[in-house]
Image 1: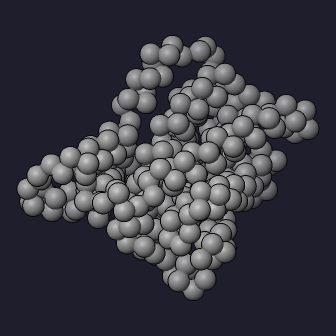
Image 2: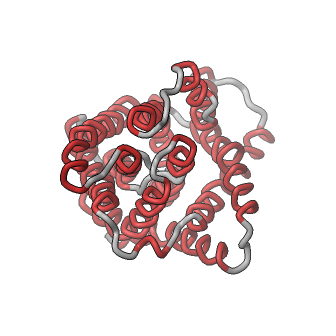
Length: 308
């Protein structure tokens, strides 16, 4: 438990620093948007490419880790869809609000996941978490767009447009490039790896600062039933289901812990952008992200301590 808390403390300190900087030193929205775009399109893809390119994928349970997380995501997604009529009847949670519950319950904050597992398990943890990104990012993009289109968007997006949104995701491309280099053993000059290392090392710190800058502390006051539902599904149900599936796949040790960590992180801030673009309840999703990020400081150590 002490080791887990020690690994989480610097992660949440960076998030808290981002929150402070947003309100004191760096107060212009455009500056944070620039940092977010630089991290998303340059720094974080560099980390994924270098990590996967250097990894010995034969030495880690790539398929089992990916399958456990993918099945956990599909399970919680199915549960959300099944709960939709009940949420509407009992709490008057309509279509746009439901899409925020769905995204809040299923998507994951990659920066926090990699920050924690990198501290706990080094390159092995980063490799497994990168595998989780490969497994979860494409399917979560597809499902989120599909749910937004069905429950919130004024008109359905053409399939071609949905596929283009997924194809333009830089994280998917980065994972593909890194895996291709690893499998083909392509000769990459040392300066290129050093360049990628420098970008990758900056990605987690900057990404966590941006996460903190996006939090809205006033949303912590009196959460509504929709936000509470998303918090329980993401921080409790998702890691429990992922952990059970990982055990079913006979994962243990660091492999099991990485699966649970990736499942236990709060939802991704990029979900807010999608909600704003496609007619979802963006303010509700901002509340969900804020509450989950704060509570994850407590729930993640408990989840990781149990599997360790």
